Image (cartoon, rainbow, N blue to C red):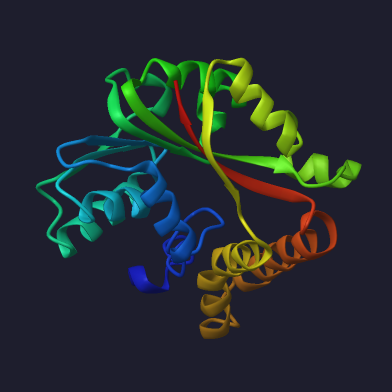
Length: 241
Protein backbone atom coordinates (compact mmCIF):
# COMPACT_ATOMS: atom_id res chain seq x y z
CA UNK A 1 0.00 0.00 0.00
CA UNK A 2 1.43 3.37 -0.97
CA UNK A 3 1.81 6.07 1.64
CA UNK A 4 -0.63 8.36 -0.17
CA UNK A 5 -3.38 5.73 0.20
CA UNK A 6 -2.65 4.91 3.81
CA UNK A 7 -5.66 6.02 5.85
CA UNK A 8 -3.44 6.93 8.80
CA UNK A 9 -1.19 9.25 6.82
CA UNK A 10 -4.06 11.32 5.41
CA UNK A 11 -5.60 12.26 8.76
CA UNK A 12 -4.15 15.78 8.85
CA UNK A 13 -3.26 16.35 5.20
CA UNK A 14 -6.06 18.87 4.50
CA UNK A 15 -5.32 20.94 7.61
CA UNK A 16 -3.16 24.05 7.72
CA UNK A 17 -3.61 24.37 11.49
CA UNK A 18 -4.52 21.77 14.07
CA UNK A 19 -6.60 24.39 15.85
CA UNK A 20 -9.62 26.53 14.86
CA UNK A 21 -7.77 29.41 13.22
CA UNK A 22 -7.85 31.42 10.00
CA UNK A 23 -4.95 33.12 8.30
CA UNK A 24 -6.38 36.55 9.14
CA UNK A 25 -6.63 35.58 12.80
CA UNK A 26 -3.11 34.12 12.76
CA UNK A 27 -1.78 37.37 11.30
CA UNK A 28 -3.45 39.31 14.11
CA UNK A 29 -1.96 37.05 16.79
CA UNK A 30 1.53 37.34 15.34
CA UNK A 31 1.17 41.11 15.13
CA UNK A 32 0.04 41.31 18.75
CA UNK A 33 2.93 39.07 19.85
CA UNK A 34 5.31 41.76 18.59
CA UNK A 35 8.21 39.45 17.78
CA UNK A 36 11.32 41.59 17.41
CA UNK A 37 14.41 40.86 15.33
CA UNK A 38 16.69 38.40 17.05
CA UNK A 39 13.99 37.02 19.34
CA UNK A 40 13.75 33.32 20.00
CA UNK A 41 10.39 31.55 19.67
CA UNK A 42 9.47 28.19 21.22
CA UNK A 43 6.29 26.33 20.31
CA UNK A 44 5.39 23.69 22.92
CA UNK A 45 3.07 21.02 21.55
CA UNK A 46 3.78 22.40 18.10
CA UNK A 47 2.44 19.61 15.88
CA UNK A 48 3.83 20.53 12.46
CA UNK A 49 4.41 24.10 13.63
CA UNK A 50 2.59 26.18 11.03
CA UNK A 51 2.24 29.22 13.29
CA UNK A 52 5.85 28.87 14.44
CA UNK A 53 7.03 28.78 10.83
CA UNK A 54 5.01 31.88 10.01
CA UNK A 55 6.38 33.66 13.08
CA UNK A 56 9.97 32.90 12.08
CA UNK A 57 9.36 33.55 8.38
CA UNK A 58 8.01 37.02 9.10
CA UNK A 59 11.22 38.32 10.68
CA UNK A 60 14.83 37.78 11.69
CA UNK A 61 14.06 35.22 14.37
CA UNK A 62 14.75 31.60 15.20
CA UNK A 63 12.34 28.96 16.43
CA UNK A 64 12.12 25.60 18.14
CA UNK A 65 9.11 23.32 17.90
CA UNK A 66 8.59 20.64 20.54
CA UNK A 67 6.24 17.70 20.18
CA UNK A 68 6.14 13.89 20.46
CA UNK A 69 4.28 13.17 17.20
CA UNK A 70 6.94 11.90 14.79
CA UNK A 71 4.73 12.29 11.70
CA UNK A 72 3.82 15.87 12.59
CA UNK A 73 7.46 16.74 13.27
CA UNK A 74 8.50 15.26 9.93
CA UNK A 75 5.87 17.39 8.21
CA UNK A 76 7.14 20.46 10.05
CA UNK A 77 10.72 19.79 8.96
CA UNK A 78 9.60 19.42 5.36
CA UNK A 79 7.60 22.64 5.51
CA UNK A 80 10.62 24.42 6.98
CA UNK A 81 12.84 23.14 4.19
CA UNK A 82 10.30 24.08 1.52
CA UNK A 83 10.26 27.66 2.88
CA UNK A 84 14.06 27.82 3.32
CA UNK A 85 13.60 28.05 7.09
CA UNK A 86 15.34 24.80 8.02
CA UNK A 87 18.41 26.70 9.26
CA UNK A 88 16.30 28.83 11.56
CA UNK A 89 13.67 26.38 12.83
CA UNK A 90 14.41 23.16 14.71
CA UNK A 91 11.85 20.49 15.52
CA UNK A 92 12.51 18.30 18.55
CA UNK A 93 10.83 15.10 19.70
CA UNK A 94 10.33 15.83 23.38
CA UNK A 95 7.52 16.12 25.90
CA UNK A 96 6.35 19.74 26.04
CA UNK A 97 6.24 19.58 29.83
CA UNK A 98 9.93 18.61 29.92
CA UNK A 99 11.09 21.79 28.15
CA UNK A 100 13.15 24.00 30.44
CA UNK A 101 14.85 26.70 28.35
CA UNK A 102 13.18 30.16 28.48
CA UNK A 103 12.43 32.08 25.29
CA UNK A 104 11.35 35.58 24.29
CA UNK A 105 8.10 34.30 22.84
CA UNK A 106 6.43 31.03 23.82
CA UNK A 107 3.52 29.45 21.99
CA UNK A 108 1.33 26.83 23.66
CA UNK A 109 -1.84 26.24 21.69
CA UNK A 110 -4.17 23.41 22.52
CA UNK A 111 -1.46 21.69 24.57
CA UNK A 112 -2.39 22.49 28.18
CA UNK A 113 -3.19 18.79 28.65
CA UNK A 114 0.52 18.03 28.19
CA UNK A 115 1.16 19.93 31.43
CA UNK A 116 -1.74 18.38 33.33
CA UNK A 117 -4.39 21.01 32.62
CA UNK A 118 -4.91 24.74 32.26
CA UNK A 119 -3.75 25.91 35.68
CA UNK A 120 -0.68 23.67 35.72
CA UNK A 121 0.23 24.79 32.22
CA UNK A 122 -0.04 28.48 33.08
CA UNK A 123 2.10 27.93 36.19
CA UNK A 124 4.75 25.92 34.33
CA UNK A 125 4.93 28.29 31.38
CA UNK A 126 5.61 31.25 33.67
CA UNK A 127 9.17 30.00 34.10
CA UNK A 128 9.70 29.65 30.35
CA UNK A 129 9.03 33.24 29.29
CA UNK A 130 11.99 35.58 29.58
CA UNK A 131 11.51 38.94 31.35
CA UNK A 132 9.62 41.22 28.99
CA UNK A 133 8.55 38.23 26.90
CA UNK A 134 5.13 37.05 25.84
CA UNK A 135 3.14 33.82 25.92
CA UNK A 136 0.52 32.94 23.31
CA UNK A 137 -1.75 30.52 25.13
CA UNK A 138 -4.59 28.79 23.30
CA UNK A 139 -7.12 26.82 25.30
CA UNK A 140 -10.70 25.60 25.16
CA UNK A 141 -13.63 27.04 27.11
CA UNK A 142 -17.38 26.58 27.35
CA UNK A 143 -19.27 29.21 25.38
CA UNK A 144 -22.44 28.15 27.17
CA UNK A 145 -23.26 25.48 29.75
CA UNK A 146 -22.51 22.07 28.23
CA UNK A 147 -24.77 19.05 28.20
CA UNK A 148 -23.54 15.90 29.96
CA UNK A 149 -22.83 14.46 26.49
CA UNK A 150 -20.67 17.48 25.56
CA UNK A 151 -18.74 17.18 28.81
CA UNK A 152 -18.15 13.50 28.16
CA UNK A 153 -16.86 14.18 24.63
CA UNK A 154 -14.62 17.16 25.44
CA UNK A 155 -13.51 16.08 28.90
CA UNK A 156 -13.37 17.57 32.40
CA UNK A 157 -11.68 20.75 33.61
CA UNK A 158 -13.06 23.13 30.99
CA UNK A 159 -14.11 26.58 32.24
CA UNK A 160 -16.21 29.40 30.81
CA UNK A 161 -14.18 32.14 29.12
CA UNK A 162 -14.43 34.41 32.15
CA UNK A 163 -13.02 31.62 34.30
CA UNK A 164 -10.13 31.01 31.90
CA UNK A 165 -9.21 34.70 31.88
CA UNK A 166 -9.50 34.92 35.66
CA UNK A 167 -7.35 31.80 36.06
CA UNK A 168 -4.57 33.46 34.07
CA UNK A 169 -4.88 36.67 36.08
CA UNK A 170 -4.82 34.85 39.43
CA UNK A 171 -1.61 33.10 38.39
CA UNK A 172 0.15 36.40 37.80
CA UNK A 173 -0.35 36.93 34.08
CA UNK A 174 -1.58 40.12 32.44
CA UNK A 175 -3.91 39.56 29.51
CA UNK A 176 -2.46 41.75 26.76
CA UNK A 177 -4.72 40.46 24.02
CA UNK A 178 -7.69 38.11 23.85
CA UNK A 179 -9.56 36.74 20.86
CA UNK A 180 -11.66 33.65 20.27
CA UNK A 181 -12.19 31.33 17.32
CA UNK A 182 -15.32 32.28 15.40
CA UNK A 183 -17.86 29.82 14.01
CA UNK A 184 -16.37 29.77 10.52
CA UNK A 185 -12.94 28.90 11.96
CA UNK A 186 -14.52 26.09 13.98
CA UNK A 187 -16.46 24.73 11.01
CA UNK A 188 -13.36 24.78 8.84
CA UNK A 189 -11.27 23.09 11.55
CA UNK A 190 -13.77 20.28 12.02
CA UNK A 191 -14.28 19.87 8.27
CA UNK A 192 -10.59 19.76 7.40
CA UNK A 193 -9.91 17.35 10.29
CA UNK A 194 -12.27 14.94 8.55
CA UNK A 195 -11.50 15.88 4.95
CA UNK A 196 -8.39 13.78 4.33
CA UNK A 197 -10.15 10.61 5.44
CA UNK A 198 -13.38 11.56 3.67
CA UNK A 199 -11.43 11.81 0.42
CA UNK A 200 -9.77 8.47 1.16
CA UNK A 201 -13.21 6.87 1.58
CA UNK A 202 -14.33 8.20 -1.78
CA UNK A 203 -11.23 6.68 -3.38
CA UNK A 204 -11.55 3.35 -1.53
CA UNK A 205 -15.27 2.63 -0.94
CA UNK A 206 -14.71 -1.14 -0.97
CA UNK A 207 -11.62 -1.24 1.24
CA UNK A 208 -12.03 -3.57 4.25
CA UNK A 209 -11.45 -0.59 6.54
CA UNK A 210 -14.03 1.63 4.86
CA UNK A 211 -17.09 0.70 6.92
CA UNK A 212 -15.39 1.27 10.28
CA UNK A 213 -13.86 4.54 9.13
CA UNK A 214 -17.16 5.76 7.67
CA UNK A 215 -18.88 5.10 10.99
CA UNK A 216 -16.11 6.89 12.91
CA UNK A 217 -16.30 10.00 10.74
CA UNK A 218 -20.09 10.07 10.81
CA UNK A 219 -20.08 9.90 14.61
CA UNK A 220 -17.61 12.79 14.84
CA UNK A 221 -19.67 14.94 12.48
CA UNK A 222 -22.89 14.20 14.36
CA UNK A 223 -21.23 15.00 17.69
CA UNK A 224 -19.87 18.29 16.39
CA UNK A 225 -23.07 19.49 14.74
CA UNK A 226 -25.46 18.11 17.33
CA UNK A 227 -23.59 18.31 20.64
CA UNK A 228 -20.75 20.83 20.94
CA UNK A 229 -20.94 23.22 17.97
CA UNK A 230 -21.41 26.67 19.47
CA UNK A 231 -20.95 25.22 22.95
CA UNK A 232 -17.22 24.50 23.08
CA UNK A 233 -15.03 27.47 22.19
CA UNK A 234 -11.35 28.21 21.85
CA UNK A 235 -9.53 31.29 23.13
CA UNK A 236 -6.18 32.79 22.22
CA UNK A 237 -4.59 34.80 25.03
CA UNK A 238 -1.39 36.79 24.73
CA UNK A 239 -0.01 37.00 28.23
CA UNK A 240 2.83 38.86 29.92
CA UNK A 241 4.18 39.14 33.45
